[in-house]
Amino acid sequence: MPRITQLSLPEVNRALGHIDELKKQIGSLQSQLEATKHQVSLLDLQHAPATTNNLVFTWTGSTHTLSWAAGSIADKNAGGIGMNDISKLGGAHNVPVSAGSLPGLLASTYYWLAWNKVHQQMIANQSADVLFQNKNNLVICKLYTGTAGQTGIAGGGGSASSKSDLSGFQYKLF
Image (cartoon, rainbow, N blue to C red; front, side, top):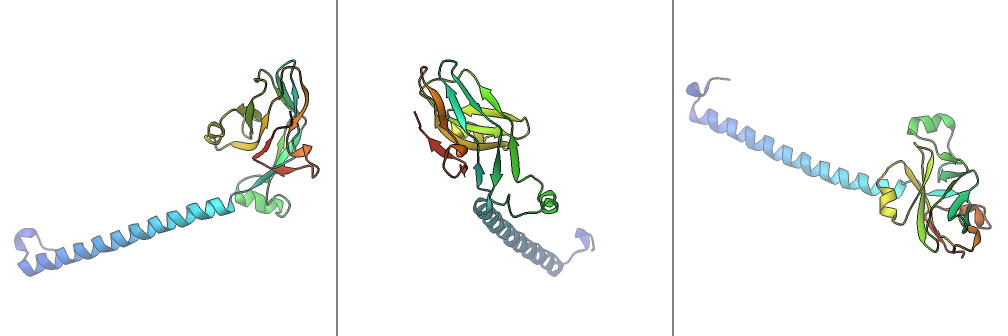
């Protein structure tokens, strides 16, 4: 392309026309990208793995401790996907949870519980928002601890007659 000193007015106008056309195309692509981002966010919500769990939580009031036996958290695809497909999707569909306990919880208080699949530990917090801030936390349920004098099952998926419940369920058994 000739130097600016060598351009005629019609050549400058043609170049500006090309710039205007490129600007319109970029604007159109940006709109399409925003529409695609919106569609993907809706699909993420629609296809997010609804999880179930079979964990039973026991409250021991005298020690202010919540404990649980080993169990698992499974997403909605856990039973219908092969091991080769799981590796392609980038994650397990059935996450084992080791037995354990959380001492020092407050009596007569609602707690949200989540299993951190990377650190292999249970987390309790009165706010679900705190648990959702870490993508590695699998939220299990919300339950109510008993008084300092009570001991027994506080809730969990394995305490229902079906032996598993949808994660996020709330229990108040005391």
